[in-house]
Length: 329
Ligand SMILES: *Cc1c(COP(=O)(O)O)cnc(C)c1O
Image (tube, rainbow, N blue to C red; front, side, top):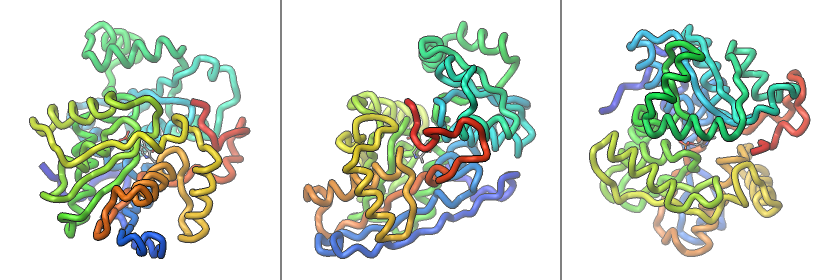
């Protein structure tokens, strides 16, 4: 079920996103070709996989007569910012439930300040309340839904990170923009919730493979289960074209160890692309790691999906920007 590129969206995307070859002698010596699928350039306010995952959900929300979006995220959530911008563009009000009640009294970081600037109403909740609500939603618990509606009124609820079947189908469309994929091709992306990887894997032609790189620590088994569940719900089948690498999270979400930082800085310097650190740098670090370990045999062509742009270098202009480049958790 592929939609044509969305030209009716109030947010006008740059699609298909550009594909750029990376000339790297170290990779060439090992027989591996690398190209970047620049989804980070799709739109400045709804970049990367956020545009792909949200757009089908926004259509569904409007079709079902919703006037409000409700979603969840951490203090520096790219998803929260994208939903705020999307709501403003589509004329939907937005609520962001944010993990961490201590943030309520603190000056807004740049990311939350931007969400508020797009009109999003922020609700700060304790970590345990946040966890409980997400658990209730994932289990389709009617009490959880009722409590949210009582507090916020009727709303289209997007899960944390925006991943659901519609989102995965939206992510699948990026594969249609790579018509030359075939045996020997490996499409690689970062994995937060797994929605992007699930969509890509489901859309691959025979012989092509997908590798996701987990950015969370200790998510072995869990993330594979999430991707498989999306395939089951969205496509009614399992796919064996994908796997998740767990060796490149760098110590956990938002952690950037010195070795990863050095890799990212060198890549930026050599290839003239700035890398977002929480997801994209880990993905590319992992690709080079697999090549080094001989797990991408000569003749492989890797398409690395650049799922988002780097954080602003100078998030000034919003209050409380200290430490803004690093997510707290
Ligand atoms: C949200 C995000 C991801 C995670 O995507 P999932 O579909 O949740 O796995 C990856 N990269 C960037 C830049 C993101 O903002």
